[in-house]
Image 1 (tube, rainbow, N blue to C red):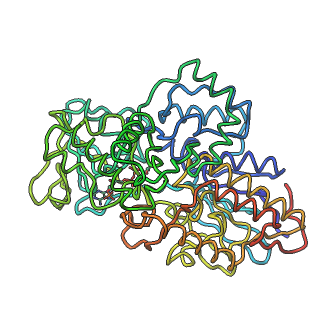
Image 2 (cartoon, helix red, strand yellow; image 1 turned 45 degrees about the vertical axis):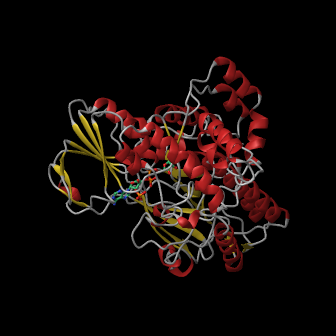
Image 3 (tube, rainbow, N blue to C red; image 1 turned 90 degrees about the vertical axis):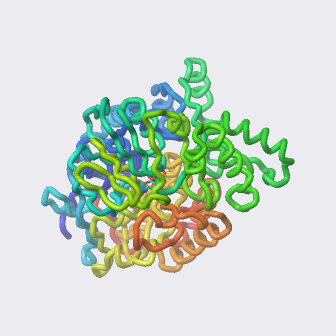
Amino acid sequence: MAILDYDMVIVGAGFAGLRMLIEARELGYKARVIEGGDGIGGTWYWNRYPGARCDVFSADYSYSFSTELEQEWRWSERYPTQPEILRYVEFVADKFSLRQDITLGTTVHGAHFDDDRNNWVVETSDGRSLRCTYFVMATGCLSTAKLPDIAGRDSFAGEVYHTAYWPQETVDFAGKRVGVIGTGSSGTQLIPVVAQQAKHLTVFQRTPNFSVPARNAVITAEEDAEIKATYADRRAKARNSPSGLGIVPNKQSALEANPTERNRHYEHQWETAGFGFVLAYYDLLLNKESNDTAADFIRAKINATVQDPATAVKLAPTGYPFGAKRPCVDSGYFETFNRDNVTLVDIRDEHLETITPSAVATNAATYELDVLIFATGFDAMTGSLLKPNIRGRNGRSLRDKWAAGPITYLGLATEGFPNFFFITGPGSPSLLSNVLLSIEQHITWLAGVLRAGEAENASTVEVTAEAEADWTDHVNVTAAKTLYSQAASYYMGDEIVGKPRVFMPYSGGVRAFGRKCDEIADGGYVGFTFEDAHVPTKQ
Ligand code: NA7
């Protein structure tokens, strides 16, 4: 038997990778995290554009595994900025002495399962091959940035940035003509900040987004004490809510409320709920007529905020239901278009034809720029999982297996790839949930699977074809009851030309998902096979 380098190799030192490392140590494994960036933090390491912040409440977007950590760390704002999140990640890494098991600045190019030895060989960019029992991709759902296919894209001679590869140094926009392509969550956060600094900002919008106000605020000492005193309840509430945000959806249908009552409720949500606005009524994502009431309310808000009527029309989302595409949570986004130094270009009206060394040109005008920012998002959910060439039993590649769309059991594993796991993969609630909660649920549950395998002296843990087919079917059936398919979005794979159009996250919510996982565990991990008669060699 070849000597193992590690019991577990984990790809990615973001929230999932770090949490996986902690769990691996609990399992008694010798584990190593391989991270492409020169620092830890994953998406929060890379997405350091001005205005970057999480749109989940800070106390919920935090680890729950250590009460000591919960009590020691002090969040300063309701919605934490990127630098504060990175400070938290660094704090966690130091507190739990994680750095010694992390290799930075190294990419995993590929990995294959060695059928003869029942373990994995992981190939890294520094030319090494690491042999391990378990191989875990903790690479995140939104981590492979996407550049748009626009003619002349690479010819721009001024400063060029992508929100997801923002430089460490501060970018100075003063006196410059800046263009931003993309108005998703990143663009919506960046645009108000850049507008305050740039000489002129031109925003190129393809699809207007529904956005609700964040109402960010400083967390007072009193509020912090309250958060710390009630963490256990808060976590339980989050686990028992559909989105993992601790928000119990209104049990009423939007159509049951009379228009005055409904408007009052929407006003209240608008002032207080942030992302929770999508749960204002339980059926907003189930019934188009209900959804229209919320969409109309938000369009009226945009219309009331934006002074120029033509710009207000361009900014108002139409043609798809509210929430079917990830809504944004903003701080002064629509107000920004009232500034004299901001121009909105709707590229559905003016076709974006080419990028030249000094401008972005549509069929109607040429916009001369000094700085061009791509806020064009990611190859979501499968992008990072399929980037390395991962080959399972008999050399079968994951790319081939998922050519028509991902097939997984619980978003955690796939048949034909023993001892290989991914955290919050396609088929898990991931992108439709507070992803921190989903990460921890996935990892602690996976630890149960691994313990069960060891109890059976198994050297391989694998899911069955039947279990993954049933689960993938369940994911599809659950999504079909919703309005998600009525928008072009990264949930459906629409962000990449040629990507299979299938709904990827599990839309049944974290509570239902957690219960299903518990049921599977109680049944002895139904859907998993534990094979062979020798325990993986511990290092
Ligand atoms: P998103 O939400 O995927 O947004 C990407 C934006 O870029 C969106 O407005 C896209 O328009 C636009 N885009 C993408 N390709 C093009 C081309 N070719 N031409 C013009 N415009 C384009 O990514 P973000 O980084 O903003 O946010 C990702 C997540 O981070 C977010 O969901 C939160 O979970 C946090 P489209 O809508 O596709 O027409």
